[in-house]
Image (cartoon, rainbow, N blue to C red):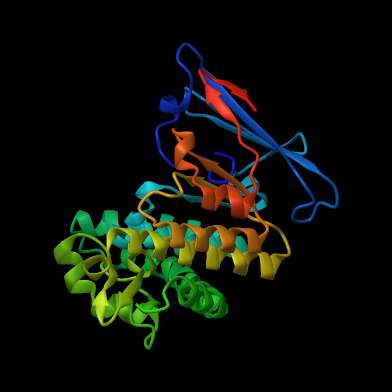
Length: 319
């Protein structure tokens, strides 16, 4: 909640607020992050009327993203195989998690782009013939679109070494590769791309090219990974990608990522589970691993990571 401004499971605010309550508040004490030389407390309150209040060091802030920028959290859970099997939007979220945390101007450009895109799509949907309105929003849309794409490419290029090493570590016999599809032809300007696709956009009623159509292409042996890899290999691919992003972030910023792992052994054999644990230990992250059954916390996890184990029942946590 603190790292994204919302639950990764629920998008509706009311669904994460306890029954008979009108709000929830979550806070955390962060150790020496960002521009702060000492520990700093951050917090978010969400209200059933839809309002959100965020604070850093007891000072109200305008955007939840300011809290999120101080608290990079990587969540990997059973449904994370959607990164391989799901829609491009899922993979864009993974890519943009990394870009957001190392490219400080990214979030501002994304807000400008998203707002202009909504306006342009509304004009296209209503089949307006007034090209002056489209050109007005295009003039706002294009610089932001090009900067978003450049930021993504800079990030992915800098990630390349960590990603190649991580994929090689987890896949020693079945090579897996990851490349970026920008969502538009960057050999031309974005203005030119919009102009060449205008008839199609008018016909469809939405903008058919741009950063909002970007994707990660995940391949193995010349095939799409989602069609070729086993369920366990897909899970391993997610770990390889996300842990590479964690390593990159820590190298670039000098700060640590918090890992939230639900049901880590799920669909992984003991050898691969051990590999994941070895990587986590090497990265030195704070890590929370959850399971509904203590027997699922197999020997590989306890032997490699030496974790503290807590039992939670009916909202009460005991060692």
